Image 1: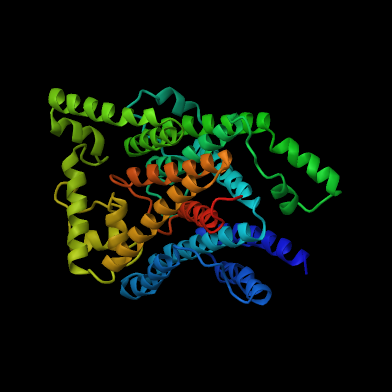
Image 2: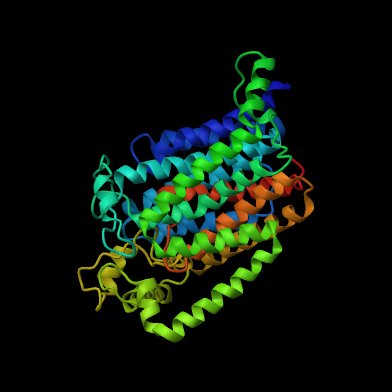
Length: 442
């Protein structure tokens, strides 16, 4: 009986990871992948008498999930909405996998943190060989782009066959502060990372050998070197994306992360606001907006405002269910043509995270999403204040800052619910929920 929780925690890790390729790239095996996601739930019910541990975010998650079938019913193109639907299911599965695996083994919170950093490295490496780079945007990086190999082509749903640099930037804005927080954990005088996590996930060799490898992998030097290299890689690829929204998000996220350790860093925010006012005074508000919000098609902020206006029109006409997951470009072209962008424009999303959630799931879905984010930030703050562990404080600060950076990015761009990197946000939500249920004592 004592081995059952450990094996279950291993399944909590393995099942969602195994389902990732079949749900973010839908195929005939997607139905089997959904069944795989249900295996830990069934085993938990058998062992503990309940399918999952309760969290403060359950009500918001439940309301959000109730709006998903309503949105699918309202969709004029169910086959287009289905991939996003599967992506949301995958994200929720990751959320509860994190919560319940940490319940079985407290040290697994660090395994999930390592997975987030590893996903950031994977995204960065794939981006280097498969992104449709902006050759002329902000920085003169053309010679660098020319030297990068192009190994990935014909990505489904891509306009030019590769990854969109803005979406890559949005994903890295979510993960880079977490990687920097891991670096700060290594720099702290007493990281206090639980080596039992490694021995739980990898039940191989002798206990003594596992413990020795765990101590090596989680030592201060190893954490500093690995987290530092991962952070540099992600930061370098972030610069290559030339995503203004991601730049702003990461800047705010890193300032807030630093403020968790040194409160005086908060004074940088008023300083940045003062610099912004000076720029607006000297250059003019219109030129600043054109530089920050320009669309590739028009090159002016007016094009972005037109997209937001069309999203508001959709929300006014479909307030309760939205227009359906992933149907924004099709409904926009058919019912709300663009004048500045042209009648043939295929704008993929609303270029605002909150507007996109409302368009996808209606006003009830937006309320549930806002409740989920609000609960997340409150729980993260309470964990940070309650725990006495420096490493947990830094990790919580990184999760808080990464999510904040992602939401700042979402003010002028969006990674839609159910998009391919969308499950990473659910992992972060689940980590904070797990820490909160443990009251930060890990």
